Length: 123
Image (tube, rainbow, N blue to C red; front, side):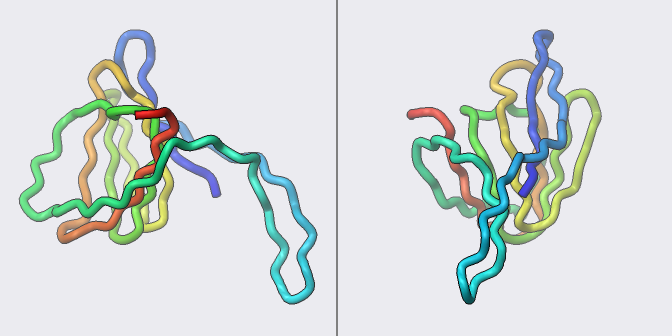
């Protein structure tokens, strides 16, 4: 499991970065598959969302807090203020931490999209 990081530099320009998570191989128990496990990450809570992506007009916005976002279905297109853009499939994980500056745009596949938000800092 790797993720896409959205971050803002000192001047407020947002950027995308591919992050590879270090993993340790855990020997398989009888009857199970081999597991590649990352270090634990402290989280504050988990939220389920539905994005009603019917009449979208994507615009730049900053992340409300440092959070992991997981799209459970449909594609999502992330575009940063520096012009970089990625279209991600269902199951994609994004670390949103562009808390200041110009922000990023998020465009969802049309329809009702199911999303999990995992804030990394207390409310």
